[in-house]
Amino acid sequence: MREDFPIDSSGHFSAKIKIDKDGYYFFKIGRPYATVRFKKGHNVHVDIDADDFFKSRSFSGDLKIENNYSVGKSSLRSKFVGDPKDYFVVPLDEFLLKIEKTRDAVFELLEKSNLSLEDKIIEKRIIEYDYLQSYNNYQKFYSYHKKVKANLPDDYYDPVINMDTDDDEIFRHSRAYRNLIVENFRHSSKRELALDSTLTIIDFVKNKISNIKSIDIREQYASMLIRQMKESNPNLDDDYKRIMSLLLTDRMKEKLTQRHKTAKESTSGAQAIDFNYENFNGGRTTLKDLSGKLLYIDVWATWCGPCIKEMPALKELVAHYAGKEIEFVSISIDHQSDYKKWRKMVPEKNVGGIHLYDNEGLNSSFMKAFSVGLIPRFMMIDREGKIITAHAPRPSDKGVKDFIDKQLSGPKVIKFTSN
Image (cartoon, rainbow, N blue to C red; front, top):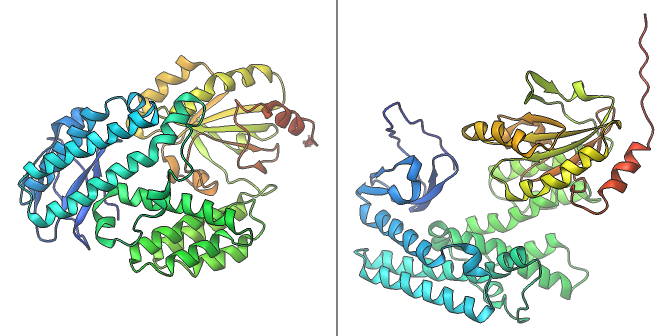
């Protein structure tokens, strides 16, 4: 469920939200977001300074105790975590001690709160899953910053693999738990598929959800299979039918159908859907305007760290292929609130090539056609506007030049015009 509410000129907004179940939901202004507790029939009032989103939140109304407790918990956790790099990128024994101290401090805050006994019981379980999520995230942060994997015990992820995956109540209240359902899928499927070479990922999910009573969790698990709808899947149509039979909600069925359609449309050799984007240098540019040359397309945003990290390598590629029959096209999907940042960053980074702005972001027809979700995303389109690949090598990839050279040496299209 997603709803958008306008803020008036005086900085106020008011809205009625229909909720099916009590629990924690999310609200955001621009990119910053936070949780808010809703209960049926209760009013929630929040005062917030959008320029100081996290520190300024203050709740009143029926659920002020519950929501102000959440603000306090968030603030306390932030004090313990500080810089995530300093928190996570330490020896394992030191890290485990840190997350235990954080958990225990939040438990103490909970005991001192004025929450009802019922809410305290729920909140205690939420804190445990917050702890487990931090535990699970150790390797991600460590390997990202150290560029090598941490040496973990073979059974390190057992607490995630063996967690309760059928807690419908906590699924509604805990974002950490919902994230851990995904991590449980990732770790347990990897283990099961390694043990049984005949098992498919669809069979694994089918077996897993057969014992799950929660409709929401069943759907979360089954929805992980939507990623099988990719152009490289040789069993695309059969898998589409099998996955469809496991989904329960119209929303996920529609998403699967869209991804299936996209996979067919974004296969190599298919005609790429056209776009019409603002050009940094003025005017607008369509895909058809760029026909006659190979296109190496980079989808990025000013807030995307990995995107920025690729820019030096992309700049080197642009210079290396200057004068060749290839255009390097960078498409920003920045939110309109970050439009000025885009205008500022393009000349600062001075990557070169063509810079376009997609004001619809991931909702534009071009981005949907390529199922762009995570960025940066690189793709290549041939001289006739047909897709070479929806997943081209990154600029920093050692084989990217060989890949581009191979495409440049391919057949060219000669256009004749009559007098």
